[in-house]
Length: 463
Image (cartoon, rainbow, N blue to C red; front, side, top):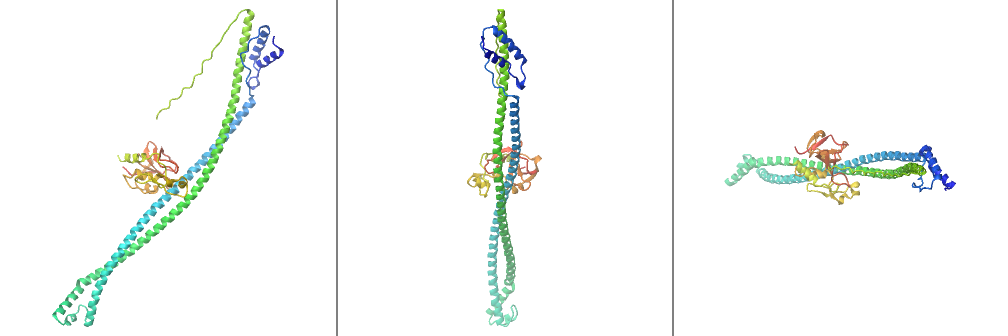
């Protein structure tokens, strides 16, 4: 015989509250019926375990609100992160532009130095020619002066008849006649030619001096441009570093909130799972009580029934199958052969990757000066080495060939970025893909064409 405490607990269990505080009428009726039968029947073993926790609707609503709040916070942080990363991209473009301006300054400086060296050589050649001509002119003048002096001692003028009359012998007369002929003819003509040559050489020397001065001015201007580019670049680098630091803070904050969101969702899932388990327990409990009532009724009438069932095994989800995905070609293959080569600012020439150079900022921070690799324009120099020699500056590479609209670009064309000043170049491969040496810390890679900040024309060197 069960005690009153057992009966009370049993009645309480069978009349448990459903979600939302509603009582189960069906469970209550079944419980009363089962209690009446069990009072007159032998006790049966209890198959259903005690009830699991049943969170209230208020607890569920609070957890869902918390998860929603965390999701909103993650959304706001994601927006801030996207804004920070957009600023990072803008700053990186500025840095790239400054780096390419420094490349331009280096190319201009090399050209100015070459022009200055050429002008120096030309000026020295001109001075040597002037010295030679001056020597010849000096000799001619000395010869002429000797004759004039002799004529003056004879009281005659050069080329006059008295020069002949003053001769003491036929031999002297012949000598004077030869001298006058020489001076009056070829020697005087030579003197005039030498004087004219001296004027030309003097003019040439003056022009050479001017060319040298121009070259020196170009060299100084290039040096100033390089200094200005380096200063502007350093400012951009500092701004980029500051923005990168802020972006890292936002990423960390976003990661923390995402973790909180995951925990909140897990909590909601836990509570909802408890509610689901409680619902399942309640249904199972009602089924057990109904079965016990049926057995008790059958026993009272002298019969018995048995039954059972098996639930169909849950089907495992099927894993979704994942689908597998002549000179122009020479250029493309040369570029593709360098896939994976590290980026090094200032690196690369017609023979392959080279050591990078210092920039006083991002490149130095990545150790580009100690790396063997390519920058963007260096990769183009290597790719087109068998076609055309290109300068190590993307801005000059843009003007190295025929311009074609982007709508007509084809495999082997060069693409450029930077409407406010070219700062990047890549090689188009077709099918919306390109190969590039992207930035310090990166490697030569194949990526989809980026259309943000791209120039409206590609440069074609072949075809």
